[in-house]
Image (tube, rainbow, N blue to C red):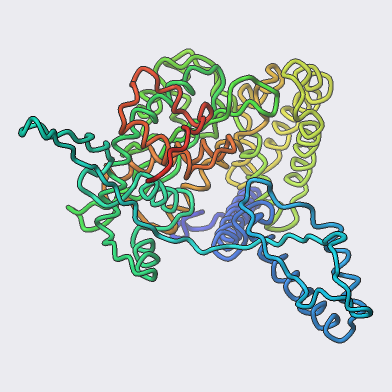
Length: 509
């Protein structure tokens, strides 16, 4: 803005220029204020978050069910009709669930007419879903000792089975439950301790922390192997998010970073399974990504973080940028008020996404060919259109910032047109970052750099399990048991979530 201490000129041309500059600056400040207001009081996402949408639907469905219950109580015919529809549409419950049979029989098996003996002519069978609250149990391990009557000094006894916590009370399944509760269900350890106490099991939070630390140390080689396998791919996604870490020396938290590297070839039918690996770093410097991805050769799909450009300059890495981030900047402007240029930019980008919806699931070659035929013209026309609009607007405006974000990255934004394996955006890795944000919201911060590294190790395995439809509780319990029992380090590939096969169950004596 102009310096009010300077005397105003009387030149009409200069005054008009000053007025135009002041108006442009005022408009920019208004946009910033609206964006801050939306950030503080409005929705954070571009569309209604699915969890918020489901929350609203839950309330509506509850109110509807209450009304239907009232109708059924007053009209038995409606109750019977709706019960019949439920039986028709319900479907069967999973076959693997144990069945507990309950027979509802008549008391008198004599014919009500002649008092003769009744015989069974059939039966009606219905199934309902039941639940037994989680229960603790104690596994008692007995090791008999054997002696020889002829040899007095001979005592034979089976060796003590290997345990994760030697001399401790938890089984490996118990430790796995603590890990999944903390890193998949986002329950801090002190809350877990409160839940256990309600069932009469008093476990100190520090005891649970000891279990987590031992498990994280044990699982480090699996995490390292997971990242090696991901880094051997030719196409990865990358993103990073803050990881607040307690800094006792200063009496507050410091801001570390969790870098996420993800692979997902399902949209184009690739042969490698999906996975994500998190790596903790104390800062966000470009050297962190360079160090992490040393030896990676291929395409890295990222947001606009400048650190990845340093990586591309040093290594054999091609950057593909994210159209979702470009779209988001125009969306912010369109939401704040009338913005014809931003609205038109959104409409053009939306057409690209409509094409992507049509080709999802097709082979990489088909995706490339259709993008060349349909998407390339849109992208080629959008760049000169943005340059023309940039020349018409104030260079200090938020609209100019949005356009300048896109134009220097145009080569990376266009890379998806040439390679069917490349996505239009980096939403794959952004979805992988969300559980980290949820855990951060519940736990607030990690207790140390080591705790943040534990977070990265276990969260990587948990989230990769989820991507491959593997139960993380069963996986972690089984893998910890195998490693404790001496699983060879040379066969770590067998322990990766996508290769996981449950070990044969052993009966507990």
